[in-house]
Length: 592
Image 1 (tube, one colour):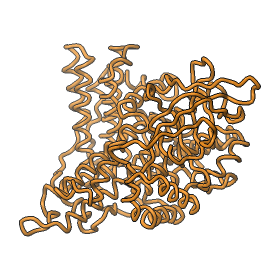
Image 2 (cartoon, one colour; image 1 turned 90 degrees about the vertical axis):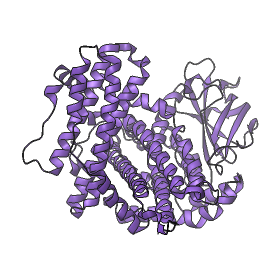
Image 3 (tube, helix red, strand yellow; image 1 turned 120 degrees about the horizontal axis):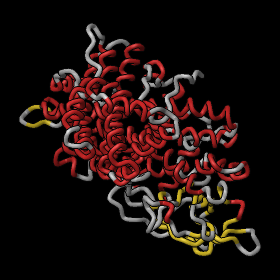
Image 4 (cartoon, helix red, strand yellow; image 1 turned 135 degrees about the horizontal axis):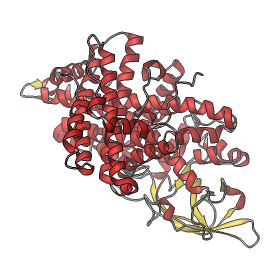
């Protein structure tokens, strides 16, 4: 595979990508579409008919449904064939994550098992551990769970108190401690548990079987949403864990935890797409049935605005998700050649794209929250009734902004990680940033006579990237090492980076789509409205940042430059949204 055009994590801020080099969902092959259809059929046959019972926290039923998905092969999509799986590409894994995302709390249980409950052993385990556990986790014979969070250690995971000490005979680690908010706790067979050995400063990781003496599982928590998912506390009281069940090396647990969180974040970015598509379809179908003042509410401009905005945000996020998924596949190919171990190569490739993983976790979870909120609004009073799917979707969505590191933590990670990668020399962020800051108005690329539609968009996106560079340089120059304490400014920079990545991904997707299928006005409408809105959001975030770091004499110069850098073109957003909504209403489901 050609890899010379591979963009490294965060490098999109200073590099340009060709549309031909990205993957778009319009390119899924027959096998990938078949896997997605199998997932949809499974939800229709096994999950949706049982949702009411699952919502009553029926642990046994959830375990049975999970095992059925394993028997169908749905748990082995990411697992290499030698361990009983299907060894599919990362793009295919993300498609499976997306499709099952429409499964409400089943999706949470399934994703926890397939991701954080299984992949730590696949990625960091030795051959013996993989043969013993991964082969059973891949088929659903075992169900997995991941035990990191503690009562006093949430976002600050390394502050956990769970402890392991070597037994006198050297054959076991004696585990003591407490974990909370553990998904699948009520019925999992295998736990990935993080603990400090003796007085170590950092965590180690262990594979702990749930039937070991001293493992005590609490009752399920009563939660706002995802009620069908078993979430409970687990207590470890002098649990004797065989020494051969240490995962990785002593003290490697914190690295394992962070790497697995990168994977969890990026897969959540895919998972929310499925939930969002379900909510959009529910929205338009209700709007096409509900009459007020003698006409269908789907004919009202205010409802069309909501429907179109749901589509725009979803389509843009989806474009970014599959763009980075292909980048990860390509990075995996490079690293597998270099290191030879499929597991380590895979997690290194995922971890490499930490900037995009955190970015998509934030963008995806907030996109879904917007969509389910508007789905309830479109349903009116009925949306507030537990009879309707959108009520459950609304409740279930809220956890995504907390899962896998809160959105606040992830927003700080996006800008901070990009800067750290640049400091290591992975790409020249600061050289480009200094150049823009030195002559902000002179860096503005102006309209070129005769430029075509996509040339104009590429120019606008280059200008928007310069806003991120200008703010980055200004903040570093003003606060230096103290920037870490200026969280509001880091969040401003991150919000610019998110909009830039989604806007560029969307533009590249539409350009490539047209090269495959020809021009379609409604897709250009999606792009035009998103660009229009992104530019305004970027201008606001940049202005907030500049007024936080710049001196009085600099502010007019920098804000004036931002005004020019965020200049776009006039879009009749009313008519564009009406055309987008028109397609959705005619299709009566999300078919973009």
